Image 1 (cartoon, one colour):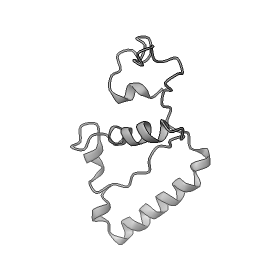
Image 2: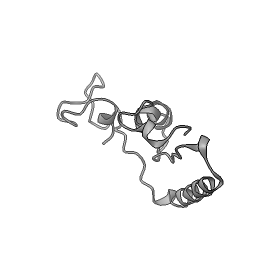
Image 3: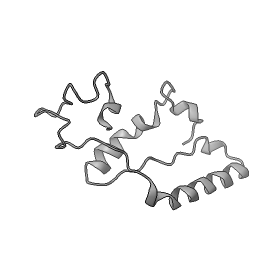
Length: 105
């Protein structure tokens, strides 16, 4: 990511990374049948020093090696019983939760 980590927080200018990526991760990958892993995000890439680049490379290597043990994002399935016939979350599912986060179990 080009910006620093706080740009992608709950109140950051670019919103939380999970919300920013939701259309791609849920609307494209999950919808097509993929198991979607949490993204590996490296903030401030446009300001890297050589040391930052080495640290990011280590982090990404560790992340790749951990893929077999990484739990996919628990998106709710369309026909899994959480949605009514109009594909709206039932009132008893994630009560009080709105927005994109309501669609993750």
